[in-house]
Picture 1 (cartoon, one colour):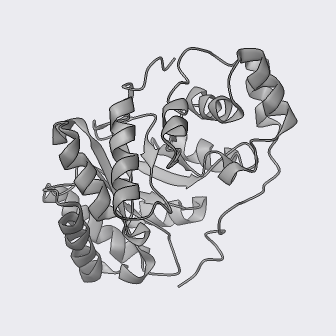
Picture 2 (cartoon, helix red, strand yellow):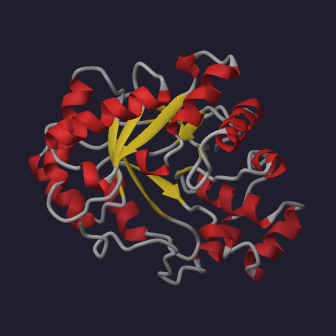
Picture 3 (cartoon, rainbow, N blue to C red):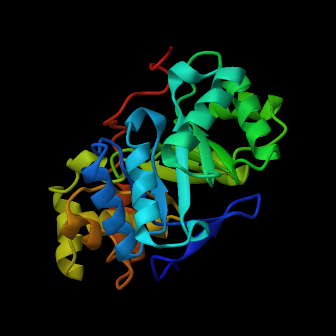
Amino acid sequence: MISNIKETITLHNGVKIPQLGFGVFKVENGSQTVQSVKKALEVGYRSIDTAAIYQNEEGVGQAIRESGIPREDIFVTSKVWNTDQGYESTLAAFDASLKRLGLDYLDLYLIHWPGKDKYVDTWRALETLYKEGKVRAIGVSNFHIHHLENLLKSSEVKPVINQIELHPRLTQVEIREFCQKHDIQVEAWSPLGRGVLLDNPTIGEIAKKHGKTSAQVIIRWHLQHGIVVIPKSVTPARIEENAQVFDFELSVEEMKGIDGLHANERVGSNPDELLF
């Protein structure tokens, strides 16, 4: 059972990723990103998740440099955006992300969305980057089972991760089981359901029992399911609070109670409908 923020999960290629990371979706580039990421690193987070479309890679890179923490101790993820999909354009997009971050390599690079019909060519570009040693691991984001099945048929390198919308109102059990069968790690974005779950009475009762916040209970639920989770906040106290999830454990009954909140409700787009 995970017991501290430094603990990692070993991906199928042997690379280790911290199970609790820090996301920067919708964090404004510049001082807000720099201060948020530096605070996260100060608290003990060692995994930072960004993307080209977030437009804050520069701030993430600046925070990492100013933190004083050795580069090899920080796990950095970015993603190729929809309009850059395709073989050559993905290679160019990766170089642009690396330049904005001011880094020599990435730890993880993801296809942000499957889209309509370019993700196989995009994946070939990620395989090239991986084979050239420019990225330590490659994966996908927002892929349904049929996307993964198609990719696995035509790929040389299997994705290490599928980063998907996942929270108690969207538990994604079928995709999680498929990924487990194929040794693909599941990572949750929007793990708190963009805040809509924080007032849920079931979660509130469990939080009260443990002397924790609803957000801490939800993060703990993810961790105990073996999911990599990347909550985000720009509030220093909340950044710290979200990391204080290692001094309690949810019971089997509490886990089942939270599992039972599933309603197939999304806060983001359905990958089958976001076509480009």
